[in-house]
Image (cartoon, rainbow, N blue to C red; front, side, top):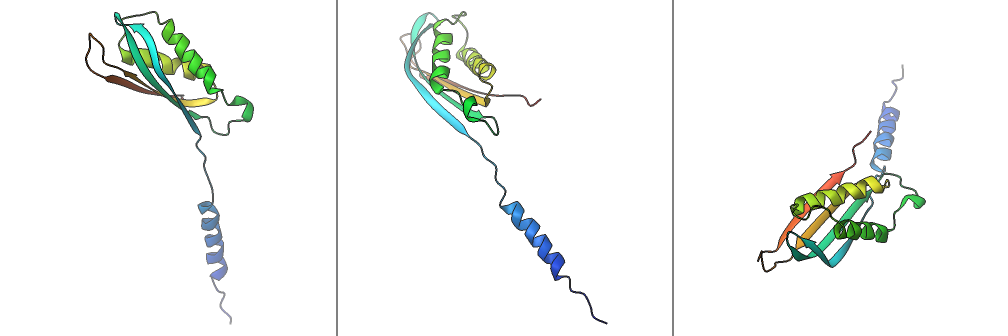
Length: 137
């Protein structure tokens, strides 16, 4: 009686493993900076360097990519009209990330870093970094 070889089973398993090794995932991100932005806040004019980076939703389609200039303008408008002049920078930063994530549906996360230059009242460079992620529903 002839014995059957198990080679085809091993071959099938190798194919399954091989195809899994070739699967891919894609993460898309974009970033920009707003340099030397002047903001009247905490009783003085502050010089800010703002870095914004964001991650797109999976499988974003071409019409859903936002023009970064719109995001930059929205940040500048928010800061120029910021209502609570004594908020800590961390709170200002949370407002920026919330506004961007709520307005731009093609984004899944936003990171904003605000660097504040030293001033006559506060002789230290300081910064706040906030990352906000969209909740999965």
